[in-house]
Each structure stands twice: as structure tokens, then as C-alpha cells.
Length: 520
Image 1 (cartoon, rainbow, N blue to C red):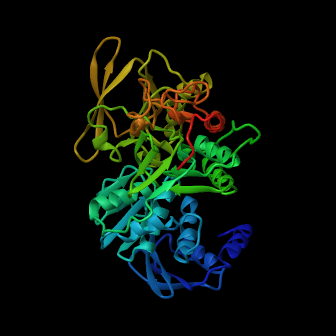
Image 2: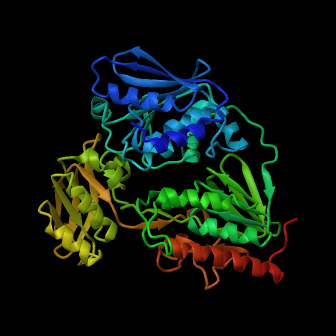
């Protein structure tokens, strides 16, 4: 099953394993995926004398990872191919205390402090690019806290469960049978939800205050660039981010990064991390910023978990996130018919009628993709004409199962408390409102800047973008902004990288001129 080159890579990766690992496989004799799973796991096990397979008869299809014959708390109910193959490899490495994704000491303490027992199930699609982040984060939690168990469940293999739980979006995480999380997520977000649900034992907060010359908030192209440029100037820099790559990780293909004809979001995120690690930058990943204050003592950044960071200068590069409709019913039905990623959640609507809200490039691209899966796709655009490129419009209009309405305002998402059943839309020309029966809604109306936490400290415009001058300076001395969170026109990766560099150089120039006081 595995190609020779991949096997060679696995042999190299597993060469440093210290402990013995076992895939304890339980399979029904007639399961249609039996041979596929056995072949995959035997191929992986053949790459190291530290890994072996133990096959037992069972009622379905699953395997758990044992370390020195003891449970790690990690189980897979599916064949971890596709994007989840990395989750399988990292489960072994992380159990051995290895892997670049292992969180720092402070986060490990928070995970270990979670009160259990906790049983987590993540329902995924092997084509979902967001699912591995969630699976790998929860596997880590199981490794670091023996009271946590986590299983990955492939929805395609367990359709009855998908229907029973009314899952319409992935990843969907259930904690002891109750829905905990739907959609993209990272370790910090999942940890906060588990802390809120189960509580934690008190942990020591010593050394929670850290001082630097410069703080960079955000790990996307702008934040990474700002941190690298600042470190090259000899400053003591901390990069605080929810995840390296940011919104870039959700981009499937990138073809306009000059000098790189093609790359993917994940590959670019990995490259950013590698470049960051070439410099003495203190990376604090999986952190959620709660507040930024400005005083005579400097800028103070408060982060979930009790940490505080202090510096005379801060660069905000927190990017943007999916913009929501903000209409009645939308929040209630996220993951139950309201979705934002056609690549991840489109397969759940095979043969069904869905709506796409938004007539820009992302909306029309989504409609074209969904037309190959769904029986009917209805596009609603608020303005009097579509904003997408002409080539996309031509393609969409050529497909018989796509219909397009302009001058259409979404007013309500309608459902039966379990799932979406319709969409209420108003014709902006006539004022007429109608209820359209459908099965799913994909919101594609652009991005909203992640600036909410900073709006009491710096000025923002009506759209929430942080207002900057030509040098990335905000209205608050010592605070700069770069990339999609700012008012810079054209939200592009290459522009964000340049803006991050510009913000770093502006901060350094202000420091040299004595505008910023060195850290004390």
C-alpha cells in the first residue's frame, strides 16, 4: 500500500523510537475495509522493529495504539489514509515524546490539569484539511493526560453514527456523547473548551510574566515575516500565535507567491515555521490573546492560561477569519447545515440541494465544486451583479444544476432544531421575501479581521480593520499592525509578508529614534 519512498522516510522517522508500540487491531471478519487497514498498519509496522501488529476478532473496525503494552488513550475507528496518515505517524512519535508539534511546558501543565475521565470522539472525513489539526491536538491531550481517551472516527465507514448524531460538518468532536466542537480548531481552542466543560486542578503560575523587546501577535505570513525581520535586527522577540500559518493553512493551492509556482497552505505553513526556527525567536503557539493594554510600563499582553508578556513594542498580525451572515439561526445551525468549507463538508450533501451565499471568487468556486456533488446549488449575491472573475462566472452559468440570484439578502436560517431545512431570502429590488427549502448553506462572503481584542487599544474602521499609516503604525505609539487585520488594501499572502517586514522595520526605526523605551 505504501510507496517505497514513503517507507524509507518512515524508517528514518522511526529510527529514534525508544519504546515498543503495538497496533492492537479489532476487526470483523467480513468488514469491507479489513484488508485495507491490515495492509496499511503492517506496512507501517514493517518500517521499525519497535512497532508490531496484534490482530483480534471484533464487531467492527478499529485499532488502538499501545506503548510498552499499555494504552496510550488513542484509538482510530477507520483507516487513517489521506490527511489522517500524518495523525497516525504523529501519534507514535508524540507517544515517544518526539515531534515538533509537542506543546511547551505551560500548555502541557494545563492539559495534565484537566479533570477526567474524558472520552472524546472526533468524526472526520479523510479529504478534510482541517480535521488532522483537531485529531492531532486531541491525541496529544490523551498522551499528556491519562484520564483522557480520544478516538478518530471516519464518517464514511460509520454512516449510521453520522446519521444518528446528525453530523453535517467535520471535524465534529463529541465529549462523552455531547457535541463539543465543530469545524476548524487548534489545541488552544479545544483546551479552553475542555477546561470550561470539565474544569482543571490548580496549577502553578510561576514565571507567568515574560519581558521582550518586541511582541508579534499572529503566526501567518505577516506575523512570521515581522518576527524574522525583528530577530535579524538583534531584538529579543516573542511570537504569540494560535497556530503557525494562520488562515493560510486553509488554502488548498497557492499559485501566486512569486518565485514559487505552486505550493499548498500546509506546505507554506511548514516553511514559515522552519524559517522562524532559524532565528532566536521565542515561539508561544496555541495561545489565545485575551487583552492588550498600554501603560508607562509598556505594552502588556494577557494570554489565556494566565501568561503575561510585556514589551515596549507590539506588532498585531492576527489576520482574518470567515465572515458570518449574522442573521437569526446561523449560529444555532453551524455544523448542522451551515458550513464554511465546501472541500471539507461538501460530501455530506451528496445528492442534496444547497445554497452558496456570496458571488465573489470563493463563492462561485464553491458553487462549481459543489455542483459535482449536490443535486442543486443556488447562489445568492447581495449586490446587483456577481463579483467573481468572468471565467468563473462563465463556468458556473454553464452548469445545469447551478442557479444564481443577485440582489438577494439572506434574512434567516431556518431549521427544525436538528438541522437546516431552509433559507429565508429577500429580493432587494421588490422587497419580496421567500422561504427556500434546502439541506445546507455554505457561507462564502469573505473574511473579517481578527481585531476584536485590540479595539479598545487601537483605532479600527467600520469593517473592524486596524487603521495604519504607510509605515504600519497605529494611532497608539509602539503598536503596529500588518497584513489582513489592517487597512492595507488587497489581502494577499505576498502583501502580508511585505507588510510584516515593514512593521518590523518601522518598530526598529522608532526604537533607534528613542520613540520606544527599551524593556526594563
